[in-house]
Length: 400
Ligand code: GLV
Ligand code: MN
Ligand code: MN
Image (cartoon, rainbow, N blue to C red; front, top):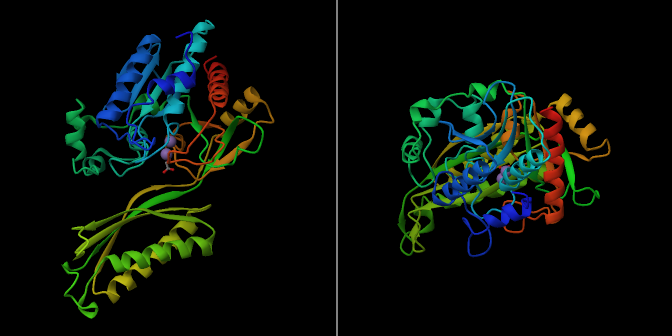
């Protein structure tokens, strides 16, 4: 424990869920993410923390007795498909290092304190980003959670049972709802901090963002014998919709992404019978997101009509603009120094989900490439250590 650093702890888990290209795919409650959970439990236990896995699939490592007015820290262990090494795990390992340092310094928290590993922050498995924090904060109901189906086809209640969790006990978490604060450290996911000359920044806000699913249906047929005028090919309106999404983003100065498409049945010499695409849209304000998505949906409807296809849109998730707690941010600023950079972000976080329920704050660690959700995500060992030390200083002040 005396030799723990963020880098050595990350190195401990560097083989778990690693893809051949060096990226990571760690999906909630599937074997690699479960291995990370077990690793987290082992490390937290080594620190003398007490483990509680709640029925929302979040793991809590308590220092002292769980209770109201707790200081909470942590992040997530899951990743997007092909994600980086730092998005999520950096916050978890930094929390462990911060606790180790405080224990070595003889700190005794005067408030309940826990490190939390939140479930399916990326929504890569259950199509609901920040699943664990939404459930814990009551933003997603048990009934709606029960309707979620994993990307691999497993209904959420079955996945829960397989993991030894009772899906009927999914509920808002009283301890979380009465917490003093949640502080999440995270790798920065753009180049906002890269050129400012500081290893750590404080987050100000998270821009509004949402995810939509568009299901196009047409008619499967033969690629060689079906004349163009006779086709009802759903891939054609998908293509038009993707271009409309890019056009709308350019026009409105926001960001739209289609990063996932599935075509059925998926044969080179088969005209598809159905195609589904997922749209991610983020902007400075929610009105722009709404306007852009409505625009894209209108184009997709026209494009589907032109091909004699059908399209059905479903909003999978929404996170409104989040401004982090002013009082907490200012307190952190005093701990880290008034000149600490402050940044907003277009990336989603559990801290943003929790921000409407309890005071939350975030620290960002410099990412020289600015890349994230990919193998090239980066942070130097020194910066990771500076992040863990900043988190320690902040937490020590908050548990005082
Ligand atoms: C998560 O990192 C997201 O921004 O979607
Ligand atoms: Mn992410
Ligand atoms: Mn993350």
